[in-house]
Length: 434
Image 1 (spheres, helix red, strand yellow):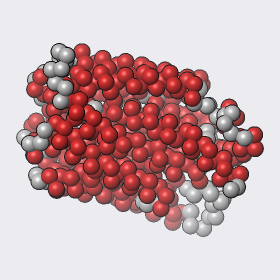
Image 2 (cartoon, one colour):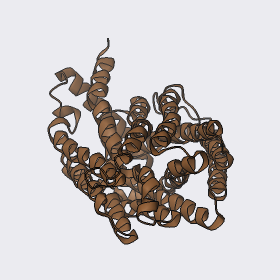
Image 3 (cartoon, rainbow, N blue to C red):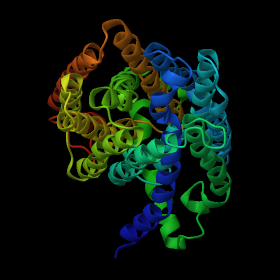
């Protein structure tokens, strides 16, 4: 085994499973409200509009605090900042059991988003400190499978917790928020002891492995400095960064606009129990987990994956049988989730220095703005039209248009750079995006 293979294998085994675990907890705390909806609308008289706004307002907190939080992480270190974020959001998530009104629901969802704002972009930035570009996409894919795993495991668990309705004087949705919020607090303390900032800090690496990883990341960072620059204003003023942000806006608007309402949609159209809904909702994300890994290793255009997500969203909009619903949700999940590692390979190959901290956060912030617009639009449109057909059709169309623009942009970029010979292992961000 070569020094390179040995070093990256150790880094992957040490970091990715732990980052995967904490992101499963984070994502479940973000989306478990979709399962709580099955009881919230009855117990607290929430309409789909109230639920959609509350589900999406998480992203407004994220939008406001995303960039400052990631800059703070770059300054104070990933280990301490991520640990603090986890402890705070765990307490807020568990506190959701106390909501009694739409106003309380909105406030706590906003605070949850504000607390978690630096978590995802912080981990993306953290991975650039350990994995150079040629190794980053597989690492991103393994980490991001936490999104689908949160649904695979979270669906049955959340459905089961809802069955605790009236146990010990608490409603099922209260048990759900309490039990799924506390692990984040515990893992925050573990993060303080487990996570190493950079390869130079890792006692579990041999000296030659530490030196190799540090040199590789530094070499790549020097190459990226000339693309956009390293200052924060270089990233915030870059049209390419904003273009990435708008694609992320559409991905999360469509993704959250569908997935937050999957349990309610499935139960409305099948009459299944809370637990049965959780099990059915988990099946598509099992397929999506495999698709994310396969797409990262074999390649695959972002545009094609977005088109697959659009097709699944459209099928889900009009399907009423359990089989067709499962097919539609599976296609949507496979397309939208497998697109994530392909998408994030682009901006991480483009940005370095302070520009990376600010640019990655800006792209994540714009995505989470879509994470507010998508669920809010779906909830309002469902209440006004009397069904999910209209909002899901609009989201599918938005995905298709963006996929076409992404494909056209990638094609134009390849044409413009066809006479150039890129350095080994430094394929352009645009070639990945197509």
